[in-house]
View 1 (tube, helix red, strand yellow):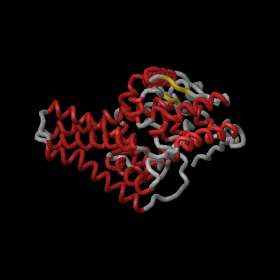
View 2 (cartoon, helix red, strand yellow):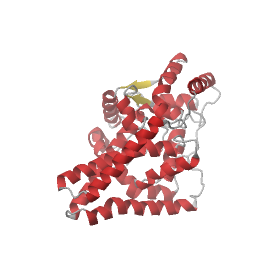
View 3 (cartoon, helix red, strand yellow):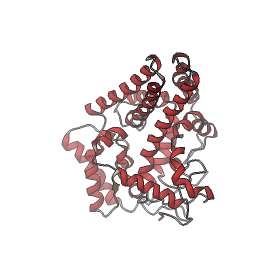
View 4 (tube, one colour):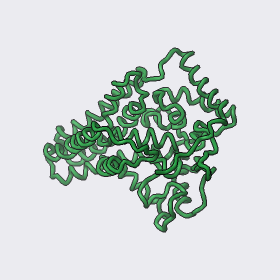
Length: 364
């Protein structure tokens, strides 16, 4: 197990204190909860309706093949919408002040075939704790043919990763549903793994929800859709290609762009910044002032705010974003943001550069 790095907790304390105070003051002054509000509930209902509705139309609509393919793509789109707009907040415990509500909504993750328990370990614990740190951040540990950090061996094939990476992004959810969850669960090796055994109930949840997902999205459509089974299998793959692409893009544009840093500990295991400032160096926003982007990404176009305040519901990120930016500027700390187009181009340039050179793109 890799030794966990130590953040410089004794420096930049004034900034962290001011940031927390300013954000807390916003909620106090406006007499509002940090959890979901009516707008969040209505948005959730919209995405749930789209998810369930498109699935029911697909399975029971008896449409022709082309329309069915369009519905498969729509199911994949709403799969991501439910995941990032509902399940993600719920797993972070930010959707509701009631634990049972968060627990219930987290099962939308399981229904979509991705273990909520493993996501919490890989994302909440590993990625959020050690963002962009080689060997600990699960989100920068993709398949060998994609090099997302300078600590990985540079291979000849990486020279073309800026071209083929997007195809593999489309396989992200397919990998989670059929491979990644099982491998990570039974190897019990996740980033900052502590050696704790998996709870017995999680064995049940893993197999029960995998079986339910395979049944709902593959077996039943093969039985009920009046077209040759090959079209259902291809539609199933299309659903995951759409879901995987959207999900991967949302997260890649937040951490794997030219502006962000990959900071590693020194020989003594010490990080150069406090945890709070580390998040600012390793995370970027895109389309921060675009309501549609917030609606479609579950607020994850503002991952700076999400990483700093994961227990605040994403519906509040647009409001606190201005506070975070102003406080960062006041204390001379970075705040990386751009348009969606710039972030996408920056990600491609980053992939191209990292596929051709050994020196660090960004370091401490």
